[in-house]
Length: 125
Image (cartoon, rainbow, N blue to C red; front, side):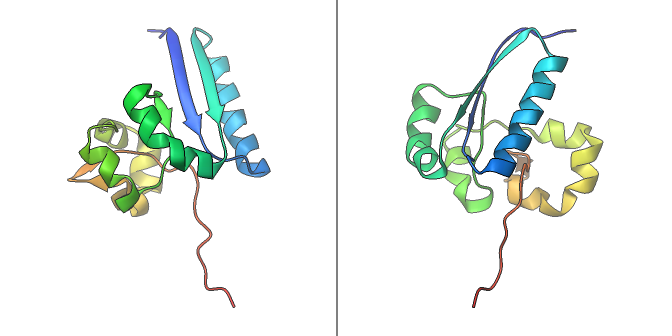
């Protein structure tokens, strides 16, 4: 059955390549779901970090980008993120291709997010 309504996404990456990829994903979603009105609020990372506590408690979006692991823990513990373990269990792409990073999206045996990017960690000289 088709869904209708509004979908609000708060996102925090203004870098050209990730922003373009995210916008392409949103456009593909909109084309596949024309009855859903999608609003994307894309701010710079530092503004997002400062605003997240306010917008999650006052006017929460349906989806937001955030950090995994210990950085997500306060929001999970406060009930501000939704358990999406059912998505991990039902989506073959998540459960197979991203199984190695599943623990970073998990807390108390449940999954609270899905990966959308990766970090460029390294040793710099």
